Structures are given as structure tokens and as C-alpha cells.
Length: 94
Image (cartoon, rainbow, N blue to C red):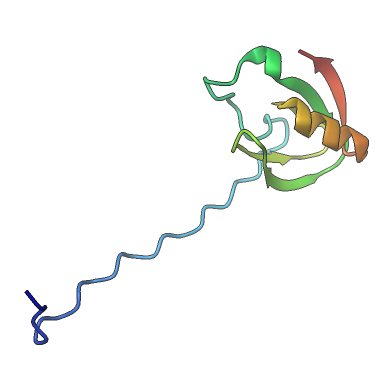
């Protein structure tokens, strides 16, 4: 059955605002503060940020926002990349 031309168009869904990660206050842990339940601890590496690092999404689909001196548990690929670029030092390999 063809649509009625006198019928008003369906309302468009409201636009969603893009969520920006909040910067942690001094002394607070870096984002994310929790490790996803499906990420085994042996697959995470502890790093310390050597400088401020802009927000990025890792291979685990988590958004990371690191400030100088922050400690974080990240996947090995991220730890290796940040260490090679001089942005972080590996504190503990799992």
C-alpha cells in the first residue's frame, strides 16, 4: 500500500551529543579506571606516562587519557607503542 502523501513525515531521532572524556584531577588514576571483565590480567601491562597523552581508543575499545605521571594498565600493543615513542615507560610486564 503506497504511503499517504498528506501524512506528516516521521520525526527524526534527536541528535546525540558526543561524549568527551573528562580529564582526571591531579592524583586520580587515568581513564579507564577499570579493566574490562573479559580482559585477562596477564594480557595487561602497567605503564607510567612520561608526558600528557591526548585521548585515544586502544585495541580493547577503551578510551585512554593519560597525564604526566599517571599509571595505567594497558594492552601490550599500547605499552610497546608508547614506550617506543618515548611517551611512557613500562613498569611491569604481566
